[in-house]
Length: 106
Image (cartoon, rainbow, N blue to C red; front, side):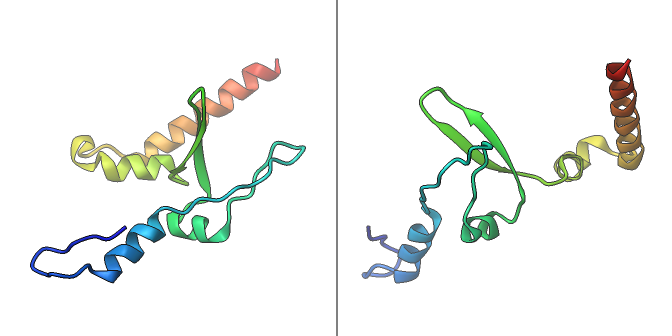
């Protein structure tokens, strides 16, 4: 696997290392409790402690997810949201969750 770099006649070894680094693959066991361990180098690379799991029929896919989805949405939608108070939205969402939980307990 060699990558040619524009303006150079030879392959750039740092490009090869980056491609190699980006394709980590590992095998892990599922515990009796349904847990898996994600190796530290992979966790560090993605910088998150939260993943999204998708069952795609013939395979299971784990994708990094933001630890705080509201903060991620705030950053991604900052221009569209304009002057919306994200802190207020968080408080309302938490109150809604609290009320829903209280209804479930009845």
